[in-house]
Structure formats: structure tokens, C-alpha cells
Image (cartoon, rainbow, N blue to C red):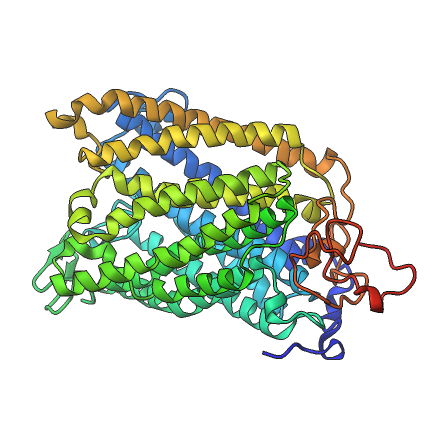
Amino acid sequence: MSTITADSHAHAHGEHAHVGSFLSTYVFSRDHKVIGIQFLFSTLVWFFIGGLLALGVRWQLAYPWSDMPILGKLLFSAQGGQIAPETYTMLFTMHASVMIFLVIIPILAGAFGNFLIPLMIGADDMAFPTLNMLSYWFMWPAFAAFGASFFIGTGPMSGWTSYPPLSLTIEAQKFWLVGLTCVGVSSMMGSVNYLTTIIQMRAPGMTMFRLPMTIWAMFITAVLQAFALPVLTAAGFMQLADLTLGTGFFIPEGWSANNTLHAAGGGQPLLWQHLFWFYSHPAVYIMILPAMGMVSDIIACFARKPLFGYKPMVYSIAGIAGLGFIVWGHHMFVSGMSPVLGMTFMVATMFIALPSAIKVFNWLGTIWGAKIQFTTPMLFALSFVAMFIIGGLSGIFMAATPVDIFIHDTYFIVAHFHYVLFAGTAMGVFGAIYFWFPKMFGRMMNEEWGKVHFFLTFVFLNCVFYPMHILGWVGFPRRLADPYHYETFRHLLALNQFITWCAILMVASQIIFAINFFYSIFFGPVAGRNPWHSNTLEWQAPSPPGHGNFDFQPVIYRGPYEYGSPEVDIDYYPQTMPPPQNRPAAVPAH
């Protein structure tokens, strides 16, 4: 992939160099930075909603069939503040659906992908600005459809996986599927844009192996989206057709529900699982690879050392993406698959531990012997590494078919998933927000309150999710509203109450983040171009960047991790600083 010359792309998107009306500038904007911030604000709102849904689930497990104070009146007014059995099923379905499809994926690929990619490669916008705008606005039908599904009957009640035939008996599932499809279309628009932009619009001198890890992670994530999403989107249309038109893609022969669905025969409910997981296992990496890239940049910056093993890190992310397409069957070990096929999926799954271990060792190698600056972004990044190790190790248990058969429907799965995606990805996202906030808004967030937010979140998340491993080992079932109906689990009530109160405190701790975030937008200390003394290209642009991003034509001379170079007297060496032999007499370090 050759680097595009300066003349071929410099300021190719000149239409963005002016400010139009309020609607064209801030609402229907085609500026990648505004679109990224739109994604950020939208996903943070849904993050709050998803957290409230989780508290509803936890309250039922701690105090079954009792009124939930304050929040119960808000969420369950129809039951006088008490959770009904079908409401509980809706709660865990929509908690997972909101967090995965409306928070984690769009905040990583939509918010940070949009904001950072052109800035970090030296472009003035995305390759297709109008398509970029549409990728955000296609999320609004998804917001509306998911939101409306809460109020249709008992709401979606078949889990975030929407397994038929159960899902084909629920009216609200139509809205859920429409929302899922819109999210998929939005993500496909973004992936095409990201791939084209990274390949075609890099600044002069920005070769592929001078890209920061954030961009490599976004690039490989876009490849995953481009190849996996069409499968899920097609499957969503097929299930929607079964629900509305009575087709028989996933309906078994002779089966009917509610006297409305009839199939002459031939449908396969298991086919949905294959199509769903062929996308949704790569989606697990869509939900964490960008965080891995951003954490790599944060760790290198605050360790003040070059990233250890840059090329192995790139190859390991690519390896994870490739292996991610051939392991989907490990989600279906309990579906009755052939032992030979199960062994194939089991071995392929265990192989994923190898590239994951490479990244962990490289992060540890980066901080080994470093003069670490314990800023708020660095604390979140380091916690990401620690939590990812726990989540990854618990995943190895589930890769083994005989072990998975026992723990598959237990809280061990819930613990593993949340250690990867909350203790892992969400902590990486928090670190990225604190790190790139100055570039987004031109002001700094409060460091002291940021560390308080980190400490409380870190402590409470471990108090919430680590005990779930213990619940899982003794067989405590997930997706069951009242496990205490069975005498075997009654002694676990106290542990669930402890988890619930820690969850309440963890959610309450995010109020500190919200106040810090919104207060700092208007009243935080003004940030310069490069408050963290980082090497990557986005820190050479103004804070916040104007239309067109850069007030000079960036030319790249080196990779993004040249910290502690003997060629300069400072401990960082920006990618745009000419080497000494080419440097004019008075070139300031940006």
C-alpha cells in the first residue's frame, strides 16, 4: 500500500473549510469530529439507561419479588415498583442489547473511530463525509426501535441472542430486529469509510507501519465489520420475515405460535445460531480491539517508552481477527454438535490465547522499568490490562467443551463476559475519554476527581463481577428470575445481595464522571495542543481542531512511539518533527 503524495490529497475536502448554518455544522454535520462527538454523547446516554436496566436485574436477584425503591417506581410503575417474571426476562435482554449494540460498538467504532482516524493519519476528513453523516443518523432509527420495543407487550424477552423459536412468539421482537438491522447498516457504512480513509488518505511519510496502534486496531476492526456484518444483517431480515410474513427460515416443520405463524416445514432454528454467532464472535473483538489499540497508545505515552514489540502487536491483532471467524461454534457446545466438530472449535478457540498473550506481554514489556506517570488515563489503561488478563483466563475454561457444558448457563459466563467488556473495554473507554478529552473540547478534565472515579469504579466492579465466578462454579443459573425456588441455591442469597449493593455503588460512582465530564467542557483548564507530550499526529493539531483539522501540511518522519530518543533533548519526538540534519534553525517542537 503506497503512501499517497501530498499533492494528491492535501485539502481534498475543501468544502469542510467553512462554517455553515447551525444545522449543517452541529446537527447534520459532515465533519468527522462533530460526528464522533455526536456518537459519544448518544452512547453515554444509552450507557446510563443500560446501567439502570442492570440494576433492575440485580435487585430481583438480591430481593426477589420485592418493591425496588425509587428506581422501581420509574422502571416498573405498572407493577407498583415490583419486577414481574416476564419483566425480568425483558430486563436482561435489553440490558445486554443496549450495552452491546447502542453503547460499546458505537462508542468505539463510531465515536473514537470517527474522531481519531483522520487526525491520527494526517487527513482533513473521512473519505466519504456524507456517508459518514448517514452512519450516525442511521443509529436514530435503531434508538427509536429499541426504545419502542420496551412498550410493546412485555418487551423483547428472548435474550440478546434472539434465539428462535422463542423469539418468534414475541411481538416486540419485530422492533428489536429493526433496531439491530439499523445498527448493522450504520456499522457497515462506517467500516467502508474507515478502510478507504486509512488506505488512501494518509499524510506524506505515513506508511502503514508508522500508524499508531489505535489506527491499526480500527483498521482491523473495520475489516471484521465489513465481512461479518452482512451475515447478521441478512439473518435479521430472515427472522423479521418469519415474524411478519410467516416465512419458514427458522420455524421448524409443523410449528405454530399464537395462531399466527405457520410453516409448511423445512425451517431450522439452529441455523439462526450459526448465522448469529458467525457475526457475534467477531463482534466480541469489534468490542475490544479498538480499546486495545487506544490502551497501547496511552501506555506508551505515560510510560515514556517506545511501545514494546510494535510489529508483533499489529500481527497479533490481525491474528485475533482471523481466528475470530473460525471459532463461533464454541458458543454452541451445548446444542448437540458432533464431538469431532466440537474438538475443532475448542482447539481453534485455545489458539486465540496466543496472540492475546503477545499483547499482554508487550504491554508489560512497555511498562517494565518505565518512569510511569500515574495520570487518570494511565490508571484506566493499566486496569484494562489487569482485567483483560482475568477475563481472558476465565475464557480458557469455556473453550474446553466438557467444562463449558457445565458452566454454560451459569453466572461464570456472566463474570467472564463482563470482565472482558466492562472491566476491560469500558475501563479502556474511560481512559480514552480522559486522554483525548483535551483534543475534543480544548479543555482538561479534573485529574483528582478522575482518580476518585477510577478508584471507586475499579473497586466496585471487582466486588460485582469477581464473586460471579464463585456463583458460576456452584452452578448458579443465569437468566432465571428466582433461582432460590430451588433449595440448592438459597444459601447464595447473601452473596447476591452483596453484589447488588456493590453494583448500585458502582453505578452511583459514574455520577462523578458525568459531573467532571460536563463541567470540564465549559470550565476545565484550557489545554494546549499537546498537554500529554505525546508523539502521535493528532496532538500537533489545534485543540480542538478546526475544519480541515491541521493548520499546516503534516509530513511524517518516524513512527509514533519514539520516546526517549537521543536525537532530541526532550523525552518525546513528534512524528512531524524533522530529523536534526533536515531541521531548520528554529523549528519549535509542537
